[in-house]
Image 1 (cartoon, rainbow, N blue to C red):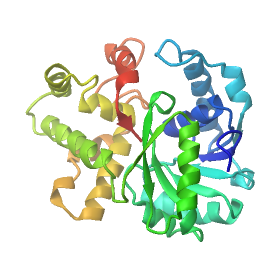
Image 2: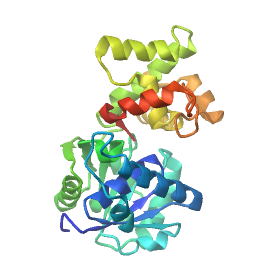
Image 3: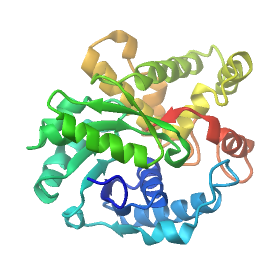
Image 4: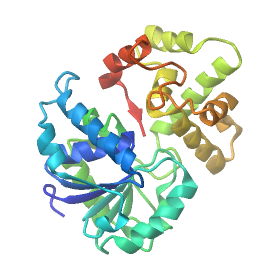
Length: 304
């Protein structure tokens, strides 16, 4: 597989999927972006166009939105992925949904294509077991916002072949990313640490020790973090945080990963963070939290 001009399928057009598709389009790859919802695809298209036009304002390169969008095909049909050379899966961090999806992808996508799981917590070896091509499955943990982040975690499964891993490595490098090699384990490196931090920060709010604003101010002012852990939770998605912590808890059977009840309540209530307009903070034209988060966005080491 050449490192430029590759036809890449991207499944899931949420925040991460749209970012991955944009990044691929910016560096010259042809992209097929698939989601089950036309509405989600419409939002993704608008988000990609806006992010391209704002790239320089956020410290990135000048990007021609029309050129990027011309390289992206938006589709609700999995069959449109049949001829891709690489497939990047970005659906929500729900193991049941992923387990249902991979056999469908396996049956559609050409046999010599590599599968890339963009997951924040599910082990790559487990994902590979849901396909008939485990030697061609690897993990890439992209950080958010994808086009602006310089590095990713690169994770082989037990059966990932050296050839497949190198193909994925070169694809990542072509996207302008530094691949950091990490062994396969739930949460890898970043989320073994980050999800515990966010979960514990949520417990501080749940127990009344401090408000979300106070927790985040401590991390910004005392440690120099560009965003606090609960601002980060709103950026990633409170529901995604919960699903990731639940995967860690299930995989390790360790009480330190027990999800905070507040995360569960907020997820049930639809308070998912920036994408829903409200999480630990409110977001909208009249709320300072949104503008403050945007100003710090480019420096944040957040993930999927």
